[in-house]
Image: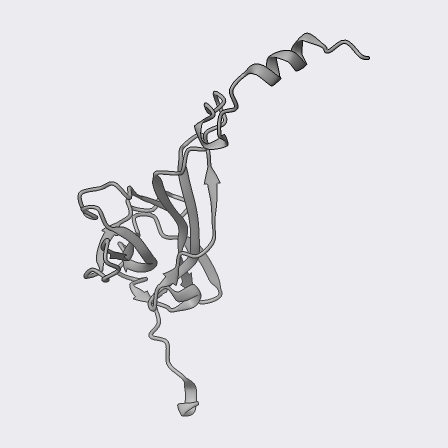
Length: 166
């Protein structure tokens, strides 16, 4: 007959703890992102050339749902003005006072403002007018953020028309 090992004896006499009552290991909890970030570019198309539109603003419009699943009236936030490279960035916290215990259902990004009088006509390239849906994202763990990318969006100086009615 084999002599039992002390670890086997302890495991036999120790009470079994159900899996849902076992303490969690330190550092193993996953923290869900609490901030939504939206980034993109706004450019001006002048003839066959493109350039960054410093100071342009994008609008992010979202619909939320309450605890019963009813949609709210859409609400919007504005990005800061684009930098010298045409880059914009906006953030939205799901715990902001805008939401009042509601969950974000869908958000879209739109062109909102061009600071250049010679490049003020928005185009629907990449849904700049109809709204670019925020659909895919990447998680930035250090910033505790879901980062969405949209665009690039374009303004032009020319009204977009279809020649000869086509």
